[in-house]
Length: 310
Image (cartoon, rainbow, N blue to C red; front, side, top):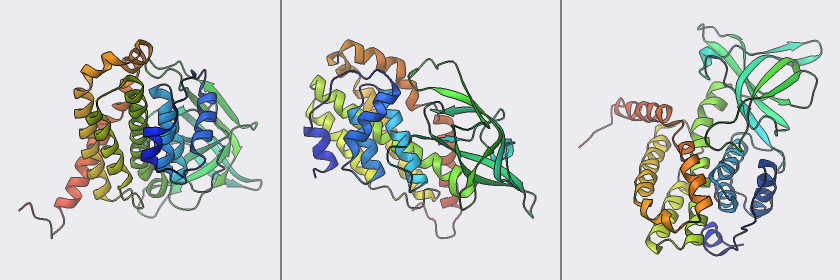
């Protein structure tokens, strides 16, 4: 098997246009079947995508697989956390309750990405209040195709409109609770895991665009260097400050590279270039929250007695 670097540099590029997110997922599965690492699969999936939105799909799906190991390879899954008040634990009103007929989910999630295509959802729900008064959260797998789940498509966003979002209502929907704490083991780490995998897929897509357009070798070298840095992140504990800080540096490097690439976009096919201009906000939508997490990571390091800036 080729390394992921050799793959994106030498593998044939499938230029057939992708007509839907379902087609993009099928191509992802074909392209990535030889790659075991979720980050490598995100890179390869992004490389196979014909637009940034479908690269995002690859990164998002591989991030969920990193979060919940053991999911079926071909199964599309979505994380369902955001409610009317946001995705902070204090805003989550959806509940997971144990009944005589098993575990059930009740509530409404207002913004779930790819819910309409997903077979199952990773739902973050409350199970009560712990001894300290903090809301307890659990993650649970919920099959979409059941009577207790209603998926209502939301209007497309102005960027990456091919990636659908939906409101999902749960009315005593059967659920399979996952082990661990819903916040500490799922919601919190997923933010970092998703950032890393989506960035990996976007960089894979950049390499594809650069190969087709004949971008400078130095540009492609920097893209691969960023991919190498991403693959070196220690994501076994994505809530630790180190991965946050390293990932923050990588996002800054990609931002600088994006600015330097402005002149080379003139070499790119006009349709691809127009989609990039439309979809580029996809890479900055979580920028404010990411910056807050980065500051929190630095603060946790600075607060350690052994920390020194010397």
